[in-house]
Image (tube, rainbow, N blue to C red; front, side, top):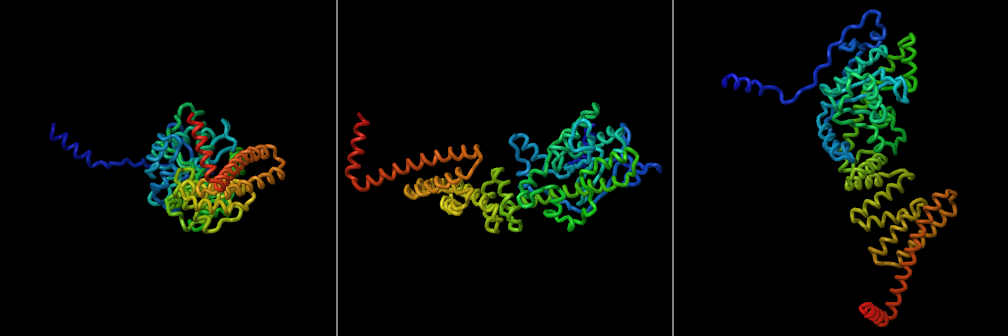
Length: 450
């Protein structure tokens, strides 16, 4: 018995230490009269809830790039420390990632909105495996959702673009509506819209995926283009027309659109990973506005040294005039936090002439000259300059809320001015009659001791 159990133990040791996701079930050939399946180039996937259409393709681009630990640390941050730790641990294994994008019967959500096309993608053999689940009719929804739940059980790390606000809540609602298929439990959900917005909105304005592909990802070099792409707003109508018996031909463009979104999503994950991986050295190959966006992203995540380096390099590369004062202000604040008071003062001096930041710059310089340089007279000059500028703002503003805020700021500056004047007068008196000042100080101390 002991020998037999020892043999089984040695056989068990030969098992792989890591379990790999199961291969998706084989597809059945569509029937001759199934025109939509033949048009879209898919097969029929079946389970005990029925069948649905599945379209499978593999693409060599974008190529797989392993996520860097630096990028994962930044992307997994959350106010909930335990959640951040679980997300960070789940994101470490890219084999567990599942890219998801849906096409729906409406953009408003709600119980009447169906996800008639659910696009899934995952890294496989150095490229991207894409599987698109399609409802030929609403009656196939249970079958599709059951298949989706199986995919999420294998790969529970969801990667989306605006999926936390739209795609996943919609799918959760559809799972709930079935009353028989449980909502899959995600190990982590990485929504790339939020880092993309932080990194590229300053340069692009719009951070729609198609704009990111055109200006950030260089989709042409990756091997695809969207010249014949359809507008997202038309997709629901194309599907309703098909259900009413119209030609299914427009749905081929819908499937391709969804396919491009999945490939763009995968490429975007690699681009964000590359940018965050190089955040520590400022990323010299990046655009100046992208560096400024990166700086603000890092600042919010507590990486002050990296944020300082990125912001400084963005200014050195040359920011547009509309962003330069804002970057200078943020760099001055970061320099002050780092203890670089001379550098901060030099940056505040650059902002004294700027109409929007002049008051703040003068106030910060007044603090600098009073506390650091021990020059109350110089500090008073900047306080008086700030008061002059703030009164000009009040006179030129018709906004009652802005005026009230400026008046409160003016009151603080008046208090600082009066205190500086009193200090200067006291110092002047002490300089002119040091013995009398010393005697008065001594007399005052004796009276306090009594």
